[in-house]
Length: 260
Image 1 (tube, rainbow, N blue to C red):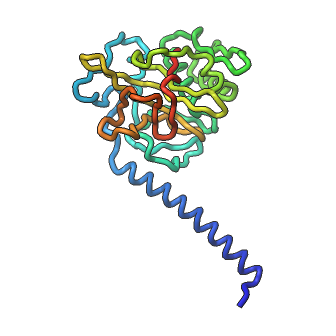
Image 2 (cartoon, one colour; image 1 turned 90 degrees about the horizontal axis):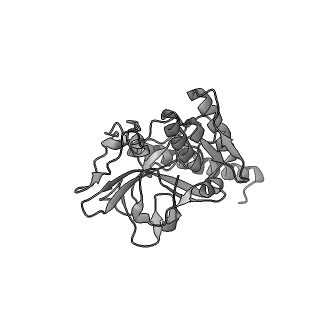
Image 3 (tube, rainbow, N blue to C red; image 1 turned 60 degrees about the horizontal axis):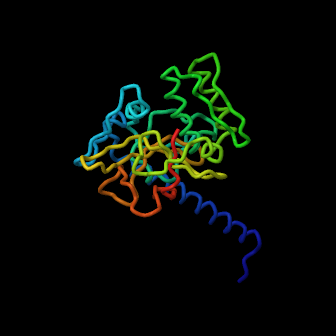
C-alpha cells in the first residue's frame, strides 16, 4: 500500500518536531544535572587553591585583586542573553554575577573588554578605557562618568570591536611561565575566541596554576571554566606541556597568550 502525499508530509513534520523536543529535553536535563549542587563560593578569591599553592601576592588596588573579588552566583546555570539556558551546561565551574544584557553582544572578546573596562572604571582611570576596532579607530570612554554611561559605551564597543581587533591591541606574552591575572588567551578572527586568566596561584618552586573565565556565542553569562583534561585539578589549570591550551569549548595555541 502506498502512502498518500499528505501522510508523508505529516510523518516528516512529526519527526522534525520530535527531534526538536528531544534536543530541548536534553538541554533541560543537562541544566538540572549541573545544578544539583549550588556553587559554594561567594567570589573567585574564595575558591580553594590546589594543595601546596598560594595565590600570588599583589596590591589591593591591582587588577589581580579586583578579579579575585568578583562575585559568583549560587546558581551554576549559564543563561543566554535571551534568558534561555545555554545548551551546554558542562563547561562551567561557576557563573560570575555580572549582567549579560538583553542583546546578542557580550560574547567572548566582549566579556574580556567588559572586565577590563569595569576595573578601570572602579579605579577612576577613565582615560585608560579605550578600545580599538579593526580599522584602528579608537573608542574612548568620555563623560559623564556614570555606570549607565559605561554600559552604553560598552554596547557600542561590543558592536565595533572583537577578537580580531583586540588581539592586535593586546601585547604578546613571550614566556607563558610569566602568566598573571588579567592575561588573555586570544585568537583573533571572525569569530575567533578569547578567555581571561582571572586568578593565579604559585607553589614554593614557582610552578603556577590558574583559573579561566569566558563568555561565548551567542552572548551568555561570563563563567569560570572547568579543566577538561584534568578532573583532579579542575577548575584550576596547569601550564600545558605541549603547544596546545585546551579549554572545554576551544583549543588555543600556547603562544596566543596576551596582556594589556
